[in-house]
Image 1 (cartoon, one colour):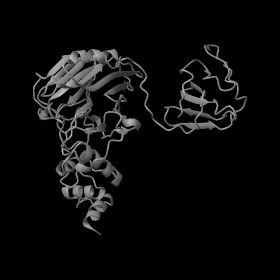
Image 2: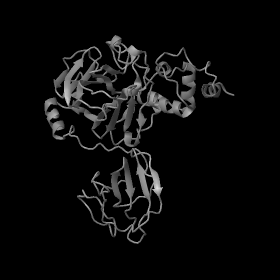
Image 3: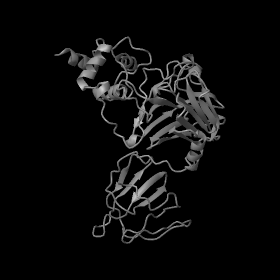
Length: 425
């Protein structure tokens, strides 16, 4: 067997000694050959990692990395177009290359599961370089309990003080370039980050659910945008930054190009010149047990002379309003239809009825889900007249029939969802 195939086979058949380097504590070996190929594309094609940097991120020896790059034909100079070319490119940050220039003792062993790379519109002509910023969402969460979460090691958290190590996680990659990460802490507190790229900006949402038995207050969040990976933005100074809460912005050496970030509700806008980085740190409202709170973020790039006017333009978009943040989480298992019934009842969401077309029999199947992602077919042949929906709730505020498919939904106990939305594609 050729040396290249031996190295790859050794990695995934258990003979790790020939292919693993002196593994750094923070390295993450790929879980499979497909995983290795995907991360190599991320690191080499997009981030322009050297072999040594890939080795640091994966724990693989330089020889194994070079062999894998040859096998998959992945080089800095042959990167394909991004799959999401109609929007900004956002990828999980792979680690292995520290995202800071300075203040490294304030970010020991940075974990990659909270970090995403947002690639700027100003990519260098030199194929060996890339231009991106790294957003750490969240870098830290404080509460009345103390330092509740920290994505690196230099300050003890409520968990490290108890000798509890949090498991490593990875970003979930959803359609249209959306990234999602969810973590459940040992006391039941959950937080979820959703990063959604658009054509000229990135929207972000951070949601916290209090699954503990204690009231949570003073919920301050630290969200960091690190500039090391963006040529022209690496000066270690705050003289190139403008803070106008909730906006935090930095310009490059030309003074014309800007990185802008914001979070709401805002606690503090600031910058660390040593990293260098931008902060727009939000604060969750107090959260009783069982309840959920959300803060919303923005990241964009601007080229021009008046960044404060750009702040005003962004403000006019009402990006921080508490509007629904729709994310595709599954491919619906039922046949696409129109005007189906959509209700929440007995702790589940229910889908039923509707119509396929004017000359087709109406569907009789009923589906339910506790989370909107995993759906169970309750029945494929519901009894009764499927052409008519009757409300029997004494508190009903909306009712009717969908003869011919005109009824958008029929609440069972009370209106729980907006009717008439098409949930299938």
